[in-house]
Image (cartoon, rainbow, N blue to C red; front, side, top):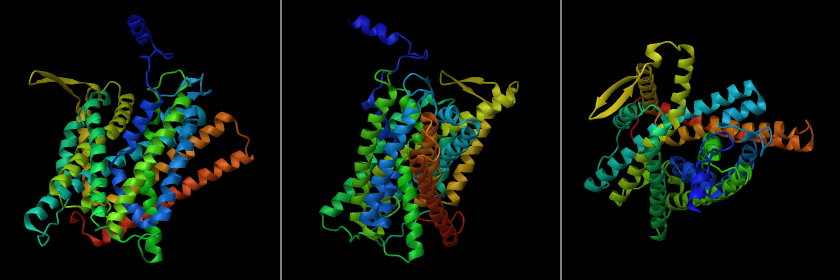
Length: 460
């Protein structure tokens, strides 16, 4: 019996690759691991801007739309038939198969712009968390009267230097250990942040809250609401890895049916977690809820330091998980443009402590320049909530709403101007409006902060 199982495991899948063994449960775990990240820490701030009614409604609405559109994406994993068609291994490949070359290029621009931008967001998140550690220790040693405001520049530079070294790892497959560590620590800091908020509430020191959120002039209120929607959108998004998750599923039952169950389980768990974190954070801090919930605590300083340390570890791994696909795209393009160039293609081996290491001059220079530019941007605009909102905005409308709906219409040959076509296009339009509003809110917030602080002089 064991020999039979071993032989079946060795049989190739229908596309000649190693047989896939994933199921709906493992896929839902992957989804939860992806969405539990730094974006969760900004949800309490978003809840404070929206208030209890709109805040809860927004999280549930985003979750509902996500389940619907990711189920459409699941049906497009194979082309042209969702069960018997040819596999699409990437999101861009699916867009090209169903919508053609122009949409393929547009999808690539959105997807890779977001991936590049997220590395800047992760640098900001890491420097903010390192400042929070230093601030907690400073206040613990010097008391509340101590001067404990610090610039993020040194921390951003240190994080950037580390990423320069890690970025020289040739490909994503050599980063499994870093990705696993990042996933584990992400749950650590989310539960620490939620636990600290719960402790404040249980101690009777929770702040006053409102069903309509912070009271501000109407213009400022509206712009903060827009920014908050971007924060929620970023936290809900896993479009960049949805086909990587699907590509782990066994073929029977059909992948689309398994992924639909995984979407429901994963997004439901995500919504519960988001409501818990945002609700506890808002109840703990009220109108003064910080953009990153963990930066609002200084005691117990060791637990605050541990939670923020978990964030930094997660960001170190997540930076590479998001950055490597972008690196690979540029290097593939360079290889196609200059196939005979030693500078672009030649690998130079050398030994370090008995380990054979290979480096490539083009990879060394271009990845280093990329990390340096991202670090400089993070130092120029270290605005946590606004940057995360902007990244969520540019990804949600196109990747989570527009492309899935257009692929579904093409796959099912839905007649133009029919009732179903009109309803789907209405949803697509609403997704665009939400994204545009979040872009406006986040950009306005960044401009406002630029006027408040001199370049490279921002302190927290």
